[in-house]
Image (cartoon, rainbow, N blue to C red; front, side, top):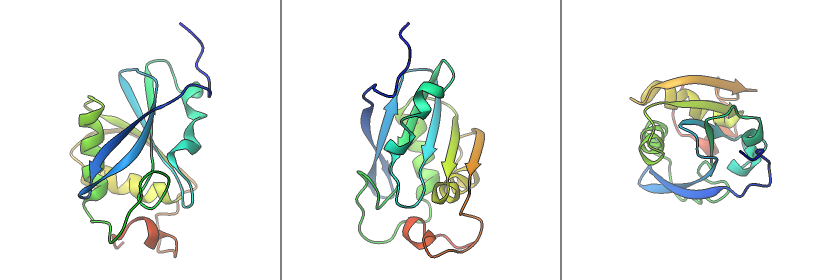
Length: 146
């Protein structure tokens, strides 16, 4: 088995959510999926260094949230979108559960996914979460009210 590196080219897929589709980069081919959600101003590609660090047997799926990276968006983001994204990611990647790593704005998405999706979230790691109170940048990433 070759060593995992950050030079591996990810497979880019489109995952339906909110009536449109989001760009998702997928590294690896393991049976478990680690879903990565970026912060404001970021993109899924920011997580390419997660792949070599991920334990054996994991795929890293890095989502471009709406308005960022390859997920261009116009209009409002539907409140049910995070839960729908989790369901469709699990379906498209053929897994029964997912694990989440989320940074800043992505933490709000992770909490919404965990709270609204029927897909089991095995583990959820929030890094510098900015989803726990109202902030200006939140209005660009998720319309839900807390």
